Image 1 (cartoon, rainbow, N blue to C red):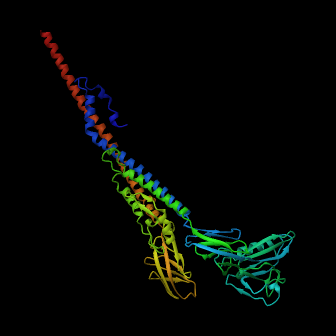
Image 2: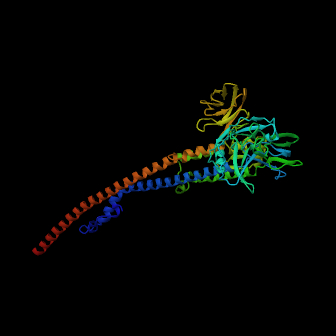
Length: 556
């Protein structure tokens, strides 16, 4: 409680001599000297507290808005969907961000790719020992099954050799685990080159080895033990049993015969994945066509959430000359003006690094209204634009780095250093430039360390020779806007600095209030003493007057 509300008790006794209400008089004098400062402290305290509250809400609203942006980015459908007329034979789906063409093809599946599978020998228990031996596993193509008798050759596919050595105490279970531990993914396929299993055939247990899919991944196994029980080669004999030969899938698309070493075909059409499930006697239809339903819903959701947050900020900064008390809390605030400027200008952000670009938000049928809000009044424009160039929609949702040459593979880029754009790649077989900037190399990888493409690393396989192409590196509208807003909301960012500044001012106001309370107490003390002395003097004069009046009465 301030000293204004804790007046000295003596004040209630002042005025008894003079007849003046000195208590009210002192209150009035103190109030006249301190009212301006007191009201200024109250006004500024209310202002700074309101600003702290407002910017805390703004920060939270921006975070919610950016979280919604991430949801749009992760859940968006980029317009092309695949379908199959018989999903028991094959499925056909959009598998990435690059599906960009309408397809209507006839597919016939002749064979499915298989994994080369070898089994044996048999044991009564998985804890039986397998004997001392060293097994060496190589991968490649057999000219024929070694059990067929003589003349078979195995041509290596270049994958790493696997070798395990057992002891007299090694069990069947342990052999399985040793092979799986030694196995590697030497071809970077995402699958180990070989997998070992144990299964029970109803009578005995046996080891089963499976290679990767395809005819070029068949196994050759050498066994240096006396019995060579685990051998599968032309030298030591084929003691293991081939239960499944490794073969490629074969199929016909629109009359063109082709093969793959897998049943998952991702390179038939860019951005679409064909999964072969069983053979077919007659053709089925696989299609890819435009379906912008989800993309349209995502864009409508963006426009709605943008307008919500923009209008909430507008309420905070709105001027009201007719009703000043309803003027926005942050009217004239430079930070809020900067945030709204960032939001409003986002619609004109150039989206570079996409083929056929640059693109803008307006390419999707979104326009900025005069009041700063957005509208999506023309979905047909989105459809026309997408059918003409699907990259326009991708530039809203997805970051990308892609190459138009299969021999030039992007490995990495730098978010901090690489400038979005399209960069020509030129290789003479020994040196490489990207966007006209020379690179340094380590093996088959080439790195840019300066200029706009700074931070890009590409891979060109050895022996490719002279080649050229274009790299497209784009950062999406959603990514760019989120980065711009993060400058305001990050820890110790612009909003935190604003709040901290106002909190510091509030602390200063507390000190000013404490100083004012001390001043008020001093004023009350001074006026109390002054009026107390005055009342004492008046009382003394009254006493003298009374004495004189008494003396005159006696003389009469």
